[in-house]
Length: 304
Image (tube, rainbow, N blue to C red; front, top):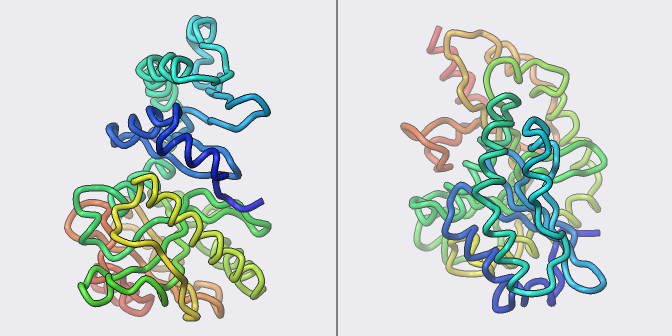
């Protein structure tokens, strides 16, 4: 089932009694609301603060009890009923957010999800952060599971230059692989394995076509909800090969791991490999700091 919300779910978030959930996410930039298969996840600091799903007689709310595993059960005992049937039920859950976030802060202090937290920061900065209208990429989705693994982020290259920003079709598909620190570069789920997995997925044209259609729907639903700061809907992706963008957060320039890994990168026949460099500081994706593989290798070589 593709990732999209039913008309009923969309209406509930836009003008119905689910609207306060959307308003809270838009008011609190530590949160990200992501669309799934007719349910939503509200993410916080790399974890899932709340899952809201449709049921036969309303909606259900779910908070992962693992985040409260060390408080002796006090938080879980105070949890509201999971069934959401009215704005009053939504208000009760929203009133719990500070306590839920505190539990997650303490849990994530012991079990950090730094890579996923970086993913969410990249999404926020480029979709609705203060510089989002100036960056050259929008993020359609994060944590996209597929038969060949998981894409950390799926994005669209939509340059901010005035003439190009006006064009809503012919935009390029971007698959982003995020890694945090040196240990993630060479581990079993490191850069090489993701290049192989992504190319396996892209080698089937039907996969590419279905992904593009799904991302167009996702982009436009998120824009309708005010979660992407773009002036128009996305109409279509181009036929250009997708970009495979490596977003390597907090790489240590004294380490040789990245340079060695890039020098022995597996073939990528179905996607062009790029590296995201920092534009000074921050997670905004600007074309001037998105380097083709050859340029990234030259830059790393200059650091020796």
